Image 1 (spheres, helix red, strand yellow):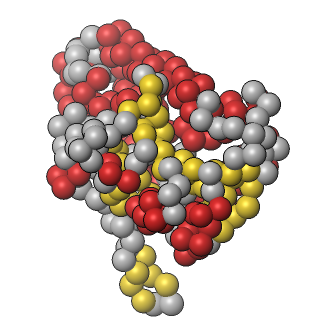
Image 2 (cartoon, one colour):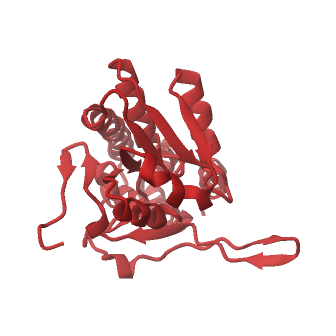
Length: 275
């Protein structure tokens, strides 16, 4: 049985609707840190096994949660667990900053970038490009039904980056107005597919049809070491509107053939020529 303080973090992770895979992985690392501060020895070892299962179950689609539990191996040594949790958080922050530097070089003065959902990694790219003095504009979707796009709009407004908000249904209309598309990712599979907020695939198709380059940005811990796209469990969270049940898969899958590149802290990954 996990301590109440740790279970509270897990519940907060389950309830989160906006922040995405990077944030949830960080919160998961904080859960390990909390656990190691409360338990030690065999109690810690047993609780870590349970915590790993709970973290993965928060959102089985997210590779970051799987990789977190693989990175922090079960141990009865509380100092070891604490050090691994802190190391994960440090590496995550360093990766986000490096992606910001690499991705910002793709942006030129006058560019118009279209994006979907909210990604802290994409936001970091925008922030770094703005600090470098680059002038650009963002087209962002509302990202229904959780409206993550409105969170991004508030962030862009606070740092003075011009933007316009569109409904999700207008991605096909506005894609042709963009210089390139840039989205985050919750999972990058072994076969190179990008799993992200539902609607990402539609944006990629619209960009492909209009000759607009499509990029994804993701830390390397979002690359799943074992699963291909067909093997990933795509989470569905149904809801009701006017007493009608609405199907609501949280993610969709964009094949690599529609992706110009995936921006990671190690550089930009490009698809094999045969794709």
